[in-house]
Length: 203
Image (spheres, rainbow, N blue to C red):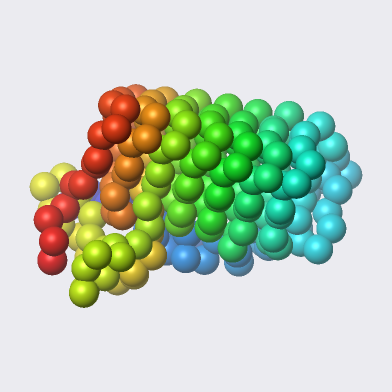
């Protein structure tokens, strides 16, 4: 079976593919990955309490940023958003007001509109999440909360109970859509408004 590689979904992913066992391994270890990454940054970043913010980034009032984290050049974080448990916001990305981003990577020029939740998720470049859309990371309704992914016709056990989605470059996620835990979206996938994406059956 072809290896499930983040680089098959996202161009120019800034972390070494050889050091990442899987997408869910990356999100589980995102704090360690970010701490290592910010050690290589230059003076264009202000680094305080292991949060690196580019000098051109805009952070609106009321946003809460919990260490560690990274916010790239010309990025925007809206008022009252909550970024925690390791967050990476790449260059020119836009996080709208009242969003929660947890243990997630947001790619270059991607936009997460207001009132979104993104948990344990990897989002590619030039992706758009309309308002109210969710990348869920946990099966609250199941007794067995193990997460599986479906890839090339194979069901893969992740071995974790917290993993959201891997969203390829150029995807469009409609307002109030929900990506169930373990969702994989190939490049330029369109998810309709109010759609529920559930790619695996209950284990």
